[in-house]
Image 1 (cartoon, rainbow, N blue to C red):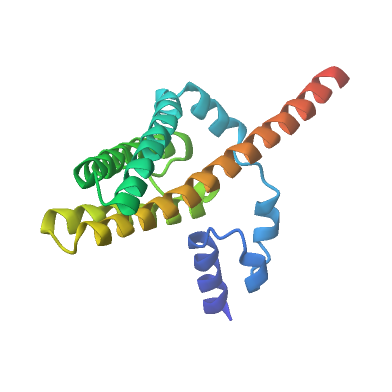
Image 2: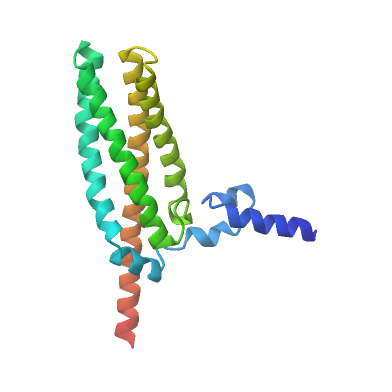
Length: 194
């Protein structure tokens, strides 16, 4: 009994899944109502220069993605512009690496760990898939595996994963804004009552 309690505690410590309650781990219900940032994490987030870096890189990467998607689609539809499409995916992948590295530094500054902080666990998990698909694309291009069409289809798979992951982050940021609005309302009401 004591061993199972200990292993259950270890599982809870390692498992950051927000759906733990559906798997029989009730401790997650309290975590689901927890705001995205604690007051200390909010201060660290707001004072970190890496927050600004992420805020600049994310829309730049998205703009490069849109241009690249157009070039990839053009190649797939017309058979023209393989070189431009390839270089655009390489540029998008370089920006992805940059935003991943700076994002890890940001996460360490705000949450105390480079990856898989509970607040961004599933976004980080899916980011690994996005990174793997983009890296596979680079490997295929450098090794000359497949023709241009096959390579661009892999790029599209990487881009589909990227769009899903970007949506995850946008939904998380929207939830954080809602949390902060509630936090301000609660603290403003408490200050008014005092």
